[in-house]
Structure formats: structure tokens, C-alpha cells
Image (cartoon, rainbow, N blue to C red; front, side):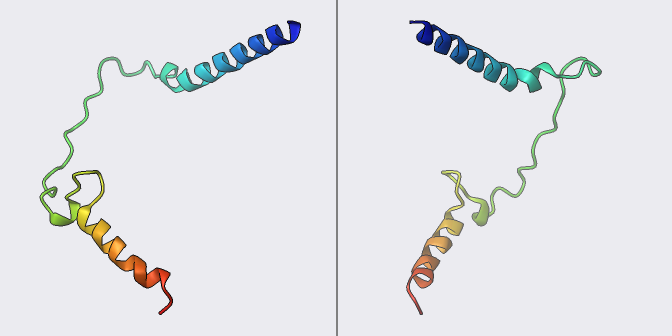
Length: 77
């Protein structure tokens, strides 16, 4: 029973330290600049390029080129 209590206290302490460590960057925000930081809109003027078309997050034509080159790299030439 004592061993279980010690393990529970140790696990709670480690979890608390992990949460505090993960929250440290958010807690360390500077107070020099009050208010909200405004970020400019991203440049999306070149997103109609066929090489940047990525409906699933992967450029389609780049993926096709990569898969097309696989057999030549796997099989000895």
C-alpha cells in the first residue's frame, strides 16, 4: 500500500512538472507590448501554380514524380 501511494505521488509530481514545463513559454510572454499582435495576410498569389496544387497537403505532381522514380531506384539497373 505504501509503495502504491509513493508511486501515485511521484507520478502526480512528474505530470505536474511536465504540464508546468509545457506551459512555460506561454507564461513567459513579454509585457512590453500591450494589446494584440497583428500579422499581415499571407501571400497567396502563386497558389494557382500546378506544382503547388496540394489538396491533401502533398503536391500531387511532385508525389507522382517521386513514385514514378521508385522502381528505378529499387531495382538494379
